[in-house]
Image (cartoon, rainbow, N blue to C red; front, side):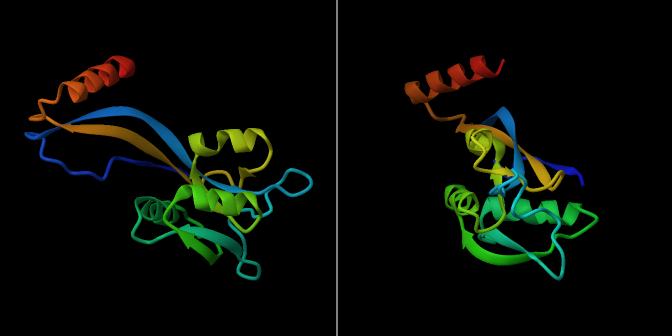
Length: 156
């Protein structure tokens, strides 16, 4: 089980836009824990007992990331699509309530994991997401320029 590293899928004209890499975050599978603190739903699942899957919509960026994760694995997970949404928060709430497995940005679920309300649902099966900010080079707005300088200083 590997970890996919994904570059930003945004292609902006470099003569018109400038980008700044702000950081990265792991995108991990999570599940509610059972009474022993183990995942209720553990990857890869089985054909006899597929895992209930809380999916992102196919057209969402994070939905495409999960598909990339699946393509990078030698063993395919056995999933049964149970619920679909385009917002991570909805899927996290459903996972926390024990309805299935969901992929989440680790920074978004670290407190819930620390509190024991979610656990990782398998090693590997993850991706590293890069976090970027972009701005138009021709934008003269002073507030935007000050914010950009502040971001540049924080990244360094």
